[in-house]
Image (cartoon, rainbow, N blue to C red):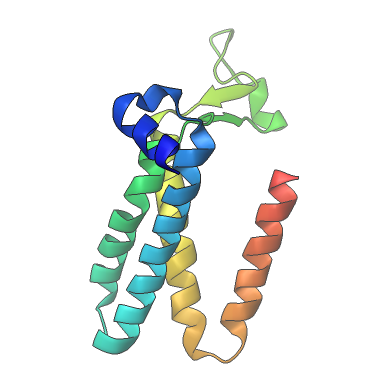
Length: 138
């Protein structure tokens, strides 16, 4: 552990991505859980919850080093304007992909929090999201 912490301080480029992304992902999950607990106790307004959720997702967006391209659906791949293909097969979204990821995190946390008042629905929704994540990553 000391070696990893020392590497982060003296040479952050030499540290493998897993040593950075995994703790940051845990931090984001803990911030979302903390926001849910604070909301249950203090009755935070929905406008504030969205802002706090966006702030909580910033660390994971800062360490994201994966691709920012999406596959264009087949019907749109051959779209042409004046004889030139517009989209192609892949589209690099860049910063907009990170914005999409942040909004996706906000959507998941807030939709689960909204359904928490209805018995059993938040567990079902969490299960659907977990299965979708597993299927996507396998």
